[in-house]
Length: 365
Image (tube, rainbow, N blue to C red; front, top):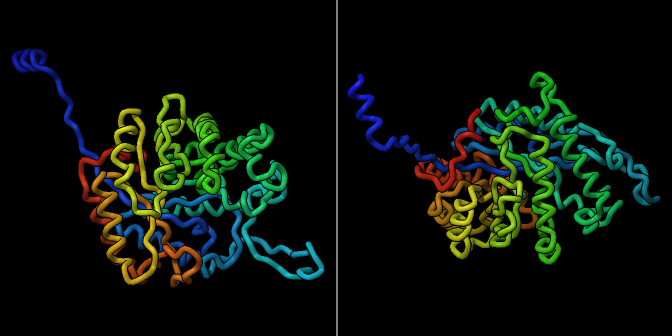
């Protein structure tokens, strides 16, 4: 034993390097509002496909999203005009639908249940605490501060910081021993302040990248668990990747790429290098293939491109019902058409070793 110890001390000691595998996941912004059977169908399908992360966010939604059966929430009478007086909408209200700082935790309670259901299937949540689509649709923040004012008005910034604190530390998950989300790292993979901040106005975005970093710091000040990663919220293709996010002073852990242009080869190599040099991570948080005769080939091509950089990805969007073909049509029904292609892509991604970034600690249940 003495000889062995002497021999070991005489040689350089090198710990074995464990190569992390890549992984895949999916998005659905209203899954927590679906009936139990529909919600479980999505989660079961994701589990079977080997998907590890589900991205959703805190926002108000009306019934029938993507022609689904989501009906959870409250009924509201429309009385804003004589024409719509007496009409009733059924929806889940936004956290601050009743006024800034007047929190209605209905949506958080639904996400509490989703955490439990997902965890039982080996899936963790990536949660956004606000959606720019709500802002642009004239929600309480837009009516109070204006759309651009949300990012520039000190009162708006302070109010939003309080929203972040409420979500992460004031609200408690009654299903998980009344713990705050900040302590639920076994259920929460990551957090982001807003889905796609300022994506509609590149000038506003580029001149206020500091908002992304400041909001990330507010999240980190509320969450001591470093394995709950903080994301940027994504941008438009190459503009998702900004040098400001790689600065050591920026509290962002993961730069999230949203790309529907299939142009990864124009920026991903450089982005991966920048992230590695900065000690940060990269993830393709949204991508999708349009419905049409070339969809299968396009799905396979996109996965091949992303996987060539050994970066994980989340598909937009997985739904529980037949695709209603609304707007930009990227939806894929679990166990429906094109699901087999996406499921196989997820399984092949999970088999990629030597991933560019090690997410294993944050994926651990």
